Every structure is written in C-alpha cells, then in structure tokens.
Length: 181
Image 1 (cartoon, one colour):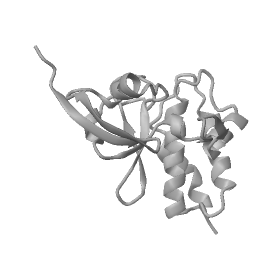
Image 2 (tube, one colour):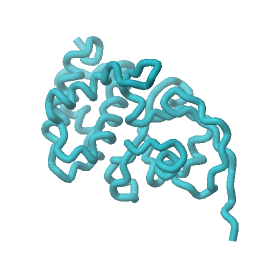
Image 3 (cartoon, one colour):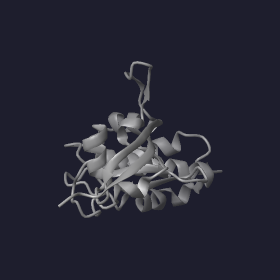
C-alpha cells in the first residue's frame, strides 16, 4: 500500500513553505508538527470541538479567520497565509522574541491560564476578534456579548475563562478604535 502524496505550498508565520510532498489525507495539525516543528497549536479533542488547535488564516480580503487544524486537511491550506501561535510575537533577525502581541501581553498580565494547554487557541480567537473590531467597532454595551461570541467555542478544562475574558476586555478597552463612541 502506498500513501498518495500531493505538493503543498503555503505561507506560515510570514515565511513561504516551498512545495513539499504531503500525504493527501494528512491533517494540518500533523503537518505543522511533523514538517514545520510548530507545536503551539495543540491537539486537544481531535474532533474540532475544543479549539485548542486553531490557527489564523488570512482571507483574500485581508480579514482574519480561525481554522481548526485537527479536522482540516493540510491541503485545504494550499496557497494560503497561516499564522500559528509561534507567529504572534515580534522577533528579531535571529528569531528571538522582542515583543509579545497585545493579546499575549494581556494574558500574562492577567495570568489568564492555568495549565496553558488551551491558551494558543484563546490567543488566536482573541486576535481574530480584535481584527474584526478594527473593521467594525462594537458599542460598549455590546462588548461582553462580542467577547463571548468570539471565545465561547474555546474550551478550557482548568476553568480559566474569567481571566481570559478579563484580558481580552482589557485589550479591547485600551486599544483605540475598537469601541464605538
């Protein structure tokens, strides 16, 4: 029995991934781990329910979307721009982190994790929410609803929700232009 291979090219964390032979049925989660050594998007449930495995995909119009990698085949990402949790922080030429993203920094300041397993998914979800709010700010009265809609699909087994939500609220309230006047 032979495994059918197909060429896959995409951009991950701003770097082009040259065409590489990838099994036709491989999930993106496995591709990230096995081919790129990117282990931040976590395998949680393996059924697309917990969202620990999410990455950001940049759509053609520049908007960002979450994509679950445990149930999405690697070849779905052909030609797309993907950002994993490893691509959120700013890095210098040597690859050393020079600055965390606003969401990552807020999560640290609020100690928004316990075991940290689900944190990459929450960072991804919050980052996509910030992108949406830059395009369409939310009224202050609707902020809690917007946060819940963005993050409720993410599962934290340690019950760290309160701190995640506080951190995201803090980032939104302290980022000009995300709340309607």
